[in-house]
Structure formats: C-alpha cells, structure tokens
Image 1 (spheres, one colour):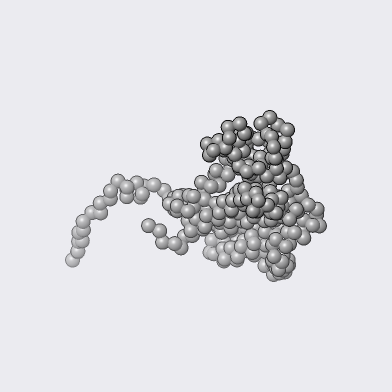
Image 2 (tube, helix red, strand yellow; image 1 turned 60 degrees about the vertical axis):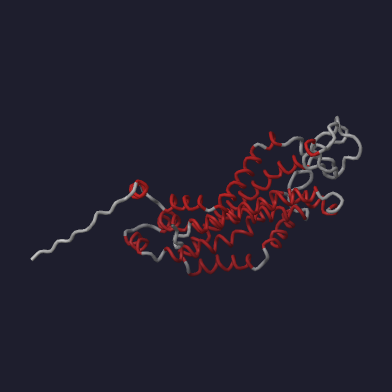
Length: 320
C-alpha cells in the first residue's frame, strides 16, 4: 500500500527569487544590516567628511595655519582673538573674511581646525593599528599555548590595566619627552591590553571547536592553526573595538596636547588649540567652541559607527 501526498507549490516573487539565487556571506549580510542602521550611516558620513577634509586640507583651508595675519593686507586694528567675520552674515566688506575668527596669535582658526583634522585622524588610526597588531599577537599566543605563557603575558597586561589609561600615557610621555610621536606611542601602549584580552578570549573559545581539533589531528602546526583558522574567526570583536578605539585615541591625543605633552606649538592640533584658549572662554568663546566641537563630532562619528558595526556583526541578533 502506497501513499501519496499533494501540496500547493510555493510561489516566490521576483525579490524572493533573487534573494535565494544570490550567494550570501557573513560580511555581505553585515554590510547590508550596517547600511540599514541610520546612526551608523551618520557616523560613516561624519568620518568620510573628516577624511575628505584631511586629504584636501590645502585646498579647503583659506589661510596658512601657521601664518599670523599681522601686517598682511586688509588686516588692521587689534587682530588677536578677533571674532569670526563672514560677509554674508553682516561682516564689513572691507575686512578680510575669517570664518571662525582668529586666535591669540592672529592665526586663522578655520585653517588650523582643518589642518588639525590630519593630526587627529593620523594619531587615531596609527595608534589603533599598532595596538591591535601587538595586542592581537600577544592575546592569540597567550590563549593558544596557555600555561606559563598565558600567565606571563596576562599578568603583564593586568599591570598595565591597573593604571588609568590617560595617567599611564602621561607617565610614558613624561619619560620619553613631549611630542606628537611620543604621544602616539603612549596611546598605543596603553591600548594594547584591551585587544590582548579580547583576542585571548576569542582564541580560548574558538580553539575548542571540532574543526580546530580536526586540523590539529591532520598535522597542522600552531602557526597555521592560529593565523589561518582561529584568527579569521576572531576578527569581528577586534574590528568593532578598533573602530570605537579610534575615537578614544583622538580624545586621548587631544588631552595630552591640552596639558602640553602632545603636539607642540605652533602645530595645529585641536587639544593644543583648546589649551591656548582655556583662559578666554568668556571673552573669545570662538577659540574654545570650534576646536571642542571638532573633537566632539569626531569621537561621536567613530562611536556611532562602532555601535552600528557591533550590531551588524552580531549573528545572535534577529533581523528582518
């Protein structure tokens, strides 16, 4: 005796058919979810704008950021800490335009902020790249080999984590000497433990999977297992933390420059500009507001993008 079953055929519209026909991957799906996140898109737009400003700073800047305006044509009277001058907003036509005013040395604030974007982005990206590379290597070695290697590396990371990051960066720069390069190195060093512990946690979880055991049984060495099998499956949290870390590095670089340990005069850097104008908050607020706003919007952009990437790369979230 045989039985037969009948049922209605499943009909798919054109969108559903394309969805089934198109190959999918974690990264493609994550990018699609990322672009659906409005806050993440806003963060990407802010970062893209900052990168464009940094790349085309000589074209966008209206004046030399290091050149005082004293003695130049069209500049008369008291120029130090002069308020913004925009003709469309009622500034006299005979005066030279300075969109964001002049600082205490009669230098154009707008041009200095534009060039300052280069300093902040370079410090942020390089510091995070260095700390990710070193921290990931230490964390992967510690998590894979364990025992005394794990104890040695992690206890050293615990010592670094015992100090507040900014305080430790101040100590390092004080020992090495003030300067932007030393500040970059200090920011990188204090960020290493975060990525080392994150990489170690990922390795401890991934190395117990069956496919790692199978590769080890087939004769794969530790280097091959670490870099070809474990590392690709540990990238997601590192990328998210790195994106968030760039904003933190920009903020720490500005803090070090604010106390005189980062960028040195007359280099245009947002934290140094705030430091120069800290006593003129009420008499010349434009010198404080615009550099502070630049720092805020930069950190906000990276935080929004980092939060969006964390949501997009998390496979546990139910998405429609």
